[in-house]
Length: 251
Image (cartoon, rainbow, N blue to C red):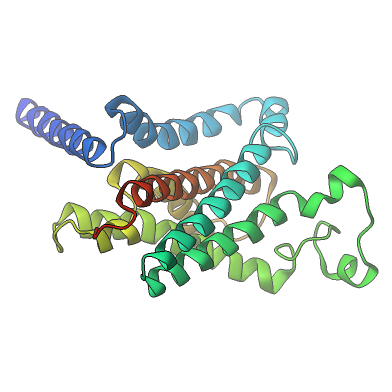
């Protein structure tokens, strides 16, 4: 029985690998890069859990303005710029609804990028307005640390992770719709879904089991946010490249 199970696992792993290779070709991405993008978020999640054994190292990696936060900023900032560029190209090709969706995506990523670095407050050193300081948990010039907004942000991250992972697996993996330009505009390729799944899994665990904030649980979210930034930025880059290749043609 064990050998049958092992064969089944190897068969599914082989099927997944072939699927990822096919996707890599379709999206004009190096197969090894596609494999890396699929595996990295999961390996990083395991690494963060193991790193908690050394509290000093864990604190250093997850601190504000440290190893994980600045890559988050650059990821969301890149997604913002590329999303707006995609919106412009879509608008010029007459796809107004998709253009509006990508513009909203780009502006949303711009807001997240700004919030990640407190709109430059910790760099420039300007003070927090008194009224905002009273209701902000970190006493910074940010909105997402206000209680009600923080809850909305957590729900938005959960839904983004769900959409980009399980949503993509259902549509692409089950072949509910044939591969088309519209599906590719709206859903990430499978090799990017683990980046979204890490965020979905983290927020789902927070809502279900870890509602109270704490050092370990809260800091672990930095990796989930970096994964989301990675997923958004690579997805936007793929779309920008795709639109550049097909500009003026029907997709």
